[in-house]
Image: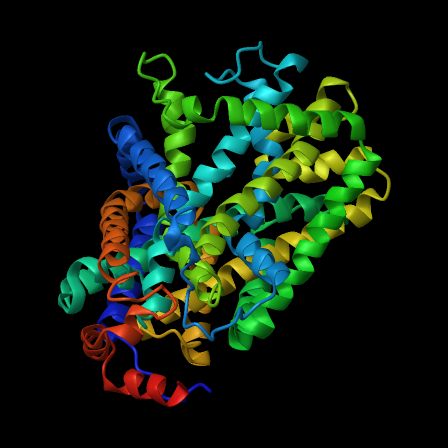
Length: 537
């Protein structure tokens, strides 16, 4: 049961809101200077720190698979008697919707087409040559597959571990407990949460912008109207209202139901295109892409463009994506931790990395593969449309199928639901970080963050600063990367120091076994939250 007057960190709330608003005012007040500075920073990050981010993602990938297949993989996120809060289907639907939903509809066609039509180091065939179908698809799967979800879970794994086995709140600072213990309270706690909220709000606002790019094209196509700023503002205000309504409903009634509905829509759309499109080609492409992806996996994972010929490509694509996914780590990883209580560490890691990767392969091959096939065979001119608007892909593709208008409406509804669940999930996580609790935050705090996130997206839409803020997320990934390293060192130390020790077979949590941890949790949480937990248990 929620308490009406929930404690929150006033300093963190004011500081995070101030930083976000300051960035917005700079973007509105001096947009050209702001954009130039952000572009300069992102370029130098991609150029000089690219190998740093590649090393981080590859190292974490090795660590997580090693943990999942070791004896630590059987550790439960919670007490022995704790059960799963959500069904497997709902769990997957929510992690899919909050993580890559809009990106799937936006990039599922745009990225394979781009790698097919533009030269890249991993596609040896001439641009636009049908022989390069699977090579182009392989690159897209690489960016949205295993490493992408490792980036998302870079904080989610340590947060989930310490939250459910040590009784700590689902916040970024929780992931540092294994290194700092009770000394975490203070500077490290504040800095890690501030960076996390900053990256989350800007990242989600950028996603809102991408979604609106697609929605604006779809609306103009379905309603045969010109999309003006006034129409987009009205659309954004409606979305903000939906965010707040869903956030007020909580995870069970809000995010879960919308995610379940949306995953059904996406699967139905994908199956329709699969069976009404070039089915044999799509199935062949899936198998061929799987082989190329697995065969070139390590080479692509560690590729840095050392010769200099493709160094800028690596920065613009691979390094950009790794920075982008890491900057979303506090949000996506934290939310997945929130919905994963009662699952084993093995299920948590493998399920959140391999399941989305498998779905990515099928989705991209069906939609992206059909797009390449249609463009090459003159069925639909998709590439010219993408050059004008990257969000046009799904709607242009549907021109070659029956029920075009109806399917376009389905895509619009799906985009809307993805935007709602993404912003909703982010608002809940930001509120949890400010309130430092594993319980659902108060309705007021959830709606506050939903309103702030929606306002950021609206202001950016009017000011035209989406590209600059997207670049800002790359900049935010630099300091956040050090938090990621510390969090995973903390995770390793926690496993080594407290699990399978003193006769414990792993069924008893460190919180239950060690009084020192219980004392630390009391200090870190404060007496009020401690009393609530004791009563609940």
